[in-house]
Structure formats: structure tokens, C-alpha cells
Length: 241
Image (cartoon, rainbow, N blue to C red; front, top):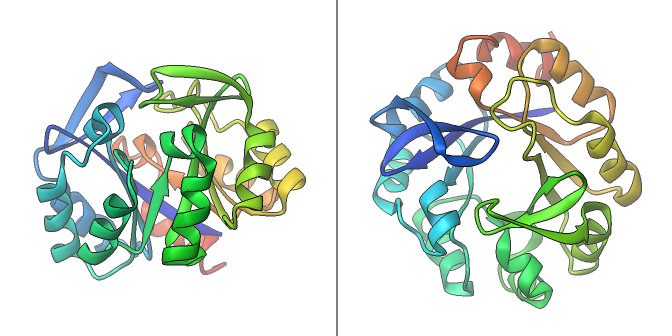
């Protein structure tokens, strides 16, 4: 199972939110690229970065911070937040990002995703499904739709998408454990590469996500609170030691 240590950027700084609430933030480092280097030094083979300002504003806000991360580390990076046009995707890939995550636009215009996959290849495109009570949320989690996450994932599969990042908003930043039931439903219903996100707090949570057959799991707050040692987790779940 691939592990994705997370870096959330807000106002150029590395922060964590509580349940996706923008007024519930904790600043962990003034320099996100230093955090990226720390994760790489601990053995990270892929890093997950979110532009929180971009997700809310609908444009790429923290490009400078992202450039510093790319310059700092050699491992691949996936990123989302503020992706609204095909050019937004191209800009990120041209910068050296490996995989771009489409969120709000996938809900608003599924054909946008089809075009992105055809233009850039499924290897470089992922769709972020952020859900609350099984319903898809958009616009930096500020709005919840009436679309079922499983149904939406199937639609994305039809568009050529292979990778889904599934975040349970109610779990994110809570250290309460991931939503295994909902995540397993996505894995079983779609057969896609599902990346679990939200609520991971201990090694047992990683065992639980691995057991349901996800492609990977994102770890955020647990790393910042030293509840999970990244090097130990990578040895266990990526290398099987």
C-alpha cells in the first residue's frame, strides 16, 4: 500500500484543518518545503499536497510554495486545490507535479475530466471525492451536494479516471480513524485505485485501510502530532518489513 504524507498549504504555510473548517487551523511550519524534505528524508516515496486557498478561491494561490517543494524533493507529488481549467492542469504538470487532483470541476462538469484524461493521460489525473455522510462536497468542502460518492466514482471511471482520493470530511483532522465502511464501498463498487484520506491516527488505522484493498492512504495530522512514525509506517506498509 502506498503511503502519502500530507502537506496542506494556507497563506503559504503548512497547516492542518479540523473537519475541513477554514477557521479551525493549526500552523505547523512556516515553510512547507521543509516539511516535504522531512517526509522524503524519512522515506516517503510520494507526497500529497493541497492548496487550501486554491480550493476555496478557485485559482492557484500557493504556486510559490509549491515550486519550493518541487525544487526541494525528488519524489513524485500529487496536488489539488483550485484546478478549474485544462491550463491549470498543464501549469502544474509543467512545474514538475506528477499527478493533479480534480475536485469541484469534476462535479460541475464531468466532461472536463474526460478531456483532462485524454489530454494528459490517466497516470497524471486523479479525482478527489470529498464526502460527508456519503454525499459529495465541493468548493473547499463548503457546499454539500446530493450526489452519492459511489455513484460519482462510477461516473468518473466512465470518464477514464483510474485514481480516486476519497476523503471523509467528518473524519479529517479529527484523529478519529478513517471511514472504513464508506471507503470499502467505493473499493468494492468501482474496482478503481482508491486512496483513503481523513482520520488516520495510528498504525491500526493503516492496517484497516490496507485490509479493504485501497491503493494508498494519506496521513496528515497523525504525522504532525508524532502519533505515527512515517519511517516505521513506510517500512511496514510499503516494504512489508
